[in-house]
Amino acid sequence: MPDVKVLCEVNNCTYWGNGNKCTADAIYVVSHTGEKAENSQETDCKTFKPSDL
Ligand code: SF4
Image (cartoon, rainbow, N blue to C red; front, side, top):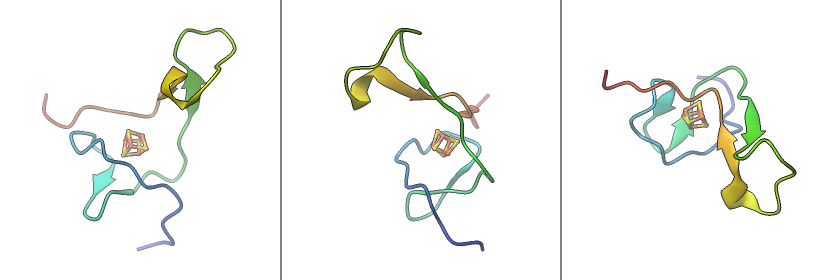
């Protein structure tokens, strides 16, 4: 297990691991609206891939 750099609570993501550890090699975060984000609520992890499909 590599050093965990990203903690994440989205436990229905393919990359989610026990202890809220993201197991992706890298993640891509974008602005929710496509405009300039003003706070963390306006950002999204684009690497998210649902694990329950
Ligand atoms: S890829 Fe994004 S949504 Fe999925 S576990 Fe990692 S940080 Fe969370």
